[in-house]
Structure formats: C-alpha cells, structure tokens
Length: 176
Image (cartoon, rainbow, N blue to C red; front, top):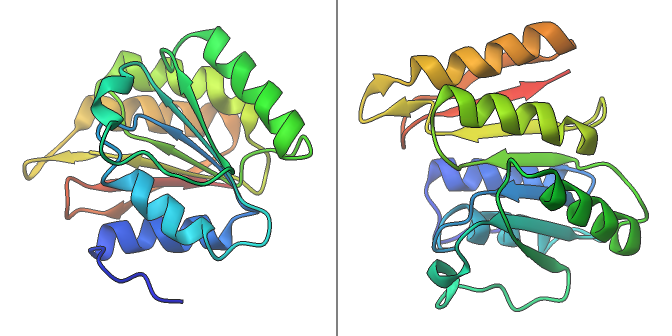
C-alpha cells in the first residue's frame, strides 16, 4: 500500500484507517487537505469503506472535497446531538449499523470541546474502536487541558490513552 504524498503523521492516520473496520468518523475537517485526504487514502484500499466527516463550516472544503460515494459530510457542530443522530442514521444506512473503527478528532483544542465530543461520540464506538486526537502538542508545548479531558474520559470509561506522536502538533491515541 502506497501512502505517497503524506508525512509520517498523515501516514499513520491513513494506515489506521486502512486497518480499521472501514468505518471512520472525522470530527473537524477544516480545508479537507490534511486528515481528510489521509483517511481517504487509507480507506481507498479497504473493501467496505465509510467515511463520515462533521464540520461546522463547509466553505473551507471547496477545493478538497472527496469525490467518492462512501464519503458522507455533515454540516454541524460536533458537540450537537443532532450531528451524532445524522451520523448514526448514515452508519445504519451505509455501514450496516457498525460502530466506527476509527474516530479522528481535530476540532477546537481545549478541555470543554474535547470533553463534550468524547462524551457524545462514545455512542459511535465499541471495544475495537481507535480514537485519534490531533493537536495534543501545540507549537512544541503540551496541550495539557485537552489531554486532561481525554485522560479523564479514558480513566472513567475503560480506555487506555497514549501520547502517540509529539511531532506535527501531536497525536493522542485511545483504545481498549
């Protein structure tokens, strides 16, 4: 599998998408030229891909919108139960109701946002889900408050958190 054109962090995201059950939830897309491309590259090799992205501002995505029928886009706040409800409906319709194999979070990088997203989106996860959270290190400085929200959630819900990468603004990984 070639993941050409992506750096090590994006290569890890592609690889984890490929190794998942084929269903990836992405919270925070921004322009679509980073993690969205990496996820798409990984899922392109999967026999049963489904990629659901949630972003509150679709205008950023104009130039890098994926052009595959297995990508579904939700315009909404990742902390809004309505976004989760739409994602669950899409998973039921296009993903045979399976839980996400990978949940990638790259939205606001603070305690409250992360706390709210983890609490809400855990309904899309099962024991096989891997969570990735970007920006656990911001400009060389640990993002202590965001990581605190993750570790509190992990400890309270039986997940294991690790500081997976420290380059490219850091990448946290949570799994069972």
